[in-house]
Length: 584
Image (cartoon, rainbow, N blue to C red):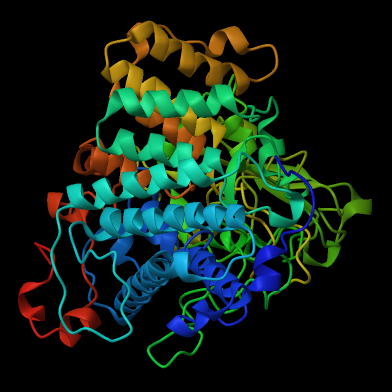
């Protein structure tokens, strides 16, 4: 599957993202244009804008202290400059990429390729890419402007096309891709589209369109006909040293070079898009900063370092999300969430005093400890407990009574009831929104170049083999084939079991429902750019957000299932006043 080696094809071939008919004059320049069609994926996958549109404001995530676009988390308003700029950038990039794909496919037969097999492969790749951009456009904005024709000029009008027509073209393009792509790539071309990626995408698209027989067929083809496999160790899927692993069907690839991993966003003047609120400036995967807390502000022997990451705390998990896991039998909880921090700086540690009070009881401290640091490097400093911890086992420690300290071990113990109120809402104060919850550790990167580095070399996974099991299970359930659906689900859950707990992870057909499947998709695919779309396609968007996201519940409405067209686009159109999506 090409699981080792360097990602070279974009670094070598992507020159300037040129987007004109001049690029069809030679194979070399045309290859550069094809690379440009790939580059726009980096403006979405692994970037803040994509998580705003797919994870924020769902049943899984609400806003963190430094969130710059709370409208996507609360649905209260989308009128701030930050929210408008994000959507403007996304709209521009998606349609720029679509036009690039249209240009390539309109001209590919006229390019003087020396190898017809290579021409066929490139046709397959770009057909897939066009399908992917059409899918993103229609899932984000609904039935907006649709075209398969390239344009060299700026148009001030736009059509309205039903989502069903988008999907028909998507399926057509993916069938072309399936017929022309190879099963695998050599290491130097890791990241290029392959046949199993096209088939995985077909499975997803058919599931969205409720074509369940085809969804199951393609999902099971990917499972059975290619060399992908579920890993027994969940943490190894996410290890920065194991990015190219047997679960990954296709990923948007990055490197540690900030120049060759530029995000691709450009403004109307052709300049690289730059906003202090949108981390796109240097390219690269940014998940390692987006889900991290500001642990260094807690003190307790912690300072910011490369290993623990640079915390931007954009989003905080809902209690519902935390509660979805049975951490005693499911390895995905501790494999997905960081719950323990270890001291890394003695100078940042508080000092022992001659005595402490715990629940009003005075404890003397041994004299030799007076004024000495409580934490040595490597000592456990902070523990987030998913389960309630009795107050008698925590103890209280000055200087701040909201932190609970074991009177012997001296570490901070924060349990589920400290993090959340009884109604499930975040225990709402500045401290909570800043650093009072466990974080997703799927995207940690301790290999970053330096402390302030915002970008990561981590690839952004788009399709993993586990999704195929989930698609097949859901499709078979919808077809009434409950035993087949249960078998698919149990194969996945057995692989995700804590060692020795495999039998406890198994379910029966009576456990299966669309809500169970949504819960399982959350446990497996959270933060992987699908949650909002999953809730929307299953008709559960409003129901589950109202039930589980305290911040978004008062405002979420049915019309939020599709996003607003950016005001800049409305203003630029001759018929813009009537073009906005309903409700906005």
